[in-house]
Image 1 (cartoon, helix red, strand yellow):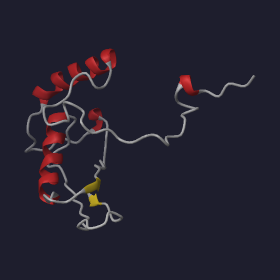
Image 2: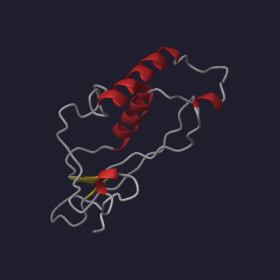
Image 3: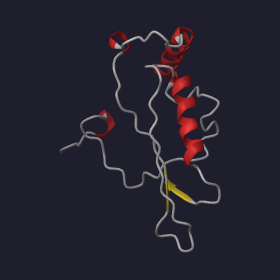
Length: 129
């Protein structure tokens, strides 16, 4: 997280946090829970933030993950995550969200200078006459 260094009178602030999950998981609920815990550690009220982000490292396929002796059972989340994935595939990625997400989508990234995706979006392929 960082504040806007160019804003006059703004308090300069920059901070980050690294968390290691106790067990491998593919549950959005657990990932969101840990992300919020990290955010609470570095958030300061009264700061005009310009940028924040999350970086996820050490991803492995579910079938290849190492199970530990003391791992919490997240099998109850497995069916829920499968159902959520099916809904996202059928109706789009923003139809259902976790309660901790921006439900009203009050914030949206500015993308007025976004380059076209010629190689990944069929609607943006260059047309030659």
